[in-house]
Structure formats: C-alpha cells, structure tokens
Length: 115
Image (cartoon, rainbow, N blue to C red; front, side, top):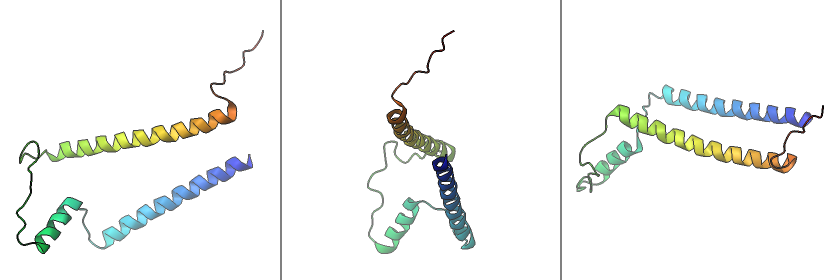
C-alpha cells in the first residue's frame, strides 16, 4: 500500500511541475508582447536578410500556388496531433499491460464459483 501512495505522490508532483513550467513559459511569452509564429515564416525572413540574390521557392508543391483554407490546415494539424497521441497511448498501454501480465500472469481468467 505504501508503494501506491508514493507513486500517486510522484505522479501528482510531476504533473504539478509540468503544469507550472507551462504556465511560466506562457506568462513569460505574454509579458514580452511576443507573437506565436511558424518556423517557416521566421526562416524566410532570415533568408531575405542574409541573401539578396535568393530567387524564391524552388518548387510550388503538388497543387501549385493553391493554399488550403486556415480551417482545413487547423483540422489537418489536429488530426496529426490526435494520431500521434493514439500512437503514444498505444505504447504506454502496451508497456503497462506487459508489466501487469508479467506480474499476474497473461490472460488470467477469474476463478469460477462452485454452487
């Protein structure tokens, strides 16, 4: 029983530390009047400053200059995040059930009651 309480305390403390780091990071960013921007935009700005003879994009993509609407881009990003979370969740469950199966036996069936 003592081990379970320690694990709960450890998980709670870890969660609190992570939450505190996220809040501090967001507060620091909000205090500096900074904006969220993509790395593609920042990289393009740096290239424009450094190189005067840069000719622009080398390739326009599969659909040419067509750009998806913002809602579609957000949906695809959310789908990608959900797929990643599912993969991570699968491996966490796989490891957890592997430990449980080694401890209690694989596919242990409940005992039948005799009447």
